[in-house]
Length: 327
Length: 263
Image 1 (tube, each protein chain N blue to C red):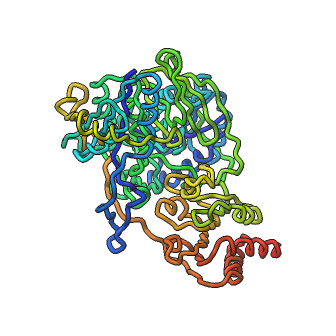
Image 2 (cartoon, chains in turn yellow, brown):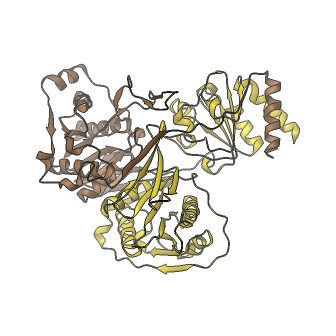
Image 3 (cartoon, chains in turn red, purple):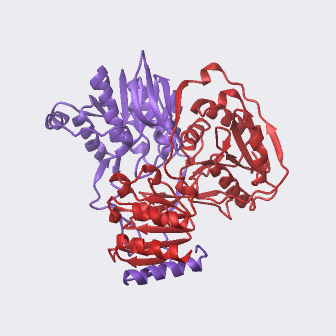
């Protein structure tokens, strides 16, 4: 067995997903404690060899890619088979996977097949100074408590991490080892048939990538227009708490929190959001948090850098005007 | 078609509160519910039953108290219910839970298995795919629509962040249900009566399953992961709360945005 860390990267339609480089960035940080060991990136797909250099530039020492027409679209069995073949050959000590709807389908299947532990949606990954084990910390009970999980007797130690939780390194031109790994697929490996794929056209951008988020909750009611105006004037996006999504005011894609997305913007405006742990679990890492809420006892004020007790619908229009004048 | 629905009894995490002094969970008085995604799994199975006359079995692994969750599943219209319960199964992580449930499912026989996407107390989404792996059958996760087609095949609409796909899958197979799949039906009065009077919750212990799963693959011993510690969430240093009029509030926000070079 090696002491290497392997990152299972994700591409869709030949486009590298950001969570992959975020995890390579994290693996680089972890590998510092394991001198002489490598960060290995695994990439699977069809005609994806061209993406390998990008992974090297983001910090991978070695890229192993499996390029095969059978991997054109993500399918559980073909991807599990390819990943298990590479894991057997590479024998890493740790495996990191993005907790996307693909990673969360693939990683448990791999872990069950090779009989090892898997810890989902980790928010902190550290190496134990004494044992060298991976300490995988994740929220549990709807984000109400944190649990640190270890995998003492099975290897590799596997963890999934949500997009936006770790930070990618800035790419630099680097040289690394790039390996074309062949996997033989049998016809029965393709055990489902994709009949059609429909892209979801989004009204707003991906909130996990936004630098500024203006987020609304129950206290906003059905009218998100003032939030949208503030987001527009600041060049940000709008987001929402579960209450607004459940009420049908906001789309599920906009939901921040334990059951939604984890975001880490520069600025987060929590408007009319009470601040249940369920919500704050997804946004408390924001660099600067404003909370506006009528209820002076709302728990959102505990995580906010600046709390304003007041009415969102009265404050936001004035704020938008003021910022417009500023520009 | 024989459908097995896997459900989990969970504490309603929306109702969980922390003891402000000790930072520990206050579990007293927190209601136990059937995990919301699993409710949609039950409903999906019952809709297939309504249309095609399938036989629906609900199973759960848990302590004896989980009987209530199975009674609710019976009251909704499931035909049979099994409680997989034994001290030997205790302390299981997702690997051992899925190998135990897979053993029970193998014993009962099945064409289709439906689980919820994930449980609200753990949020791992791992047990469904891992059951499928232990049984060596295909899976479609994140299902937002299920239709039966010719023979033993189903067409499942599978959701991704940026797209959805229509996927044809042939039984035996496993599907994990999203909460957007359907709106679970309510229990009927007659259903509740029959759930307690005529229907029964049958128990499956390790003794019943030992032909299908080895002792080293269940419970704490069969679990590759261990909880090293759990702790309350660190609350970050509290900021400043202003109770001021709107114009002053605007000035405070603008000043802060300037300090951070946003403006």
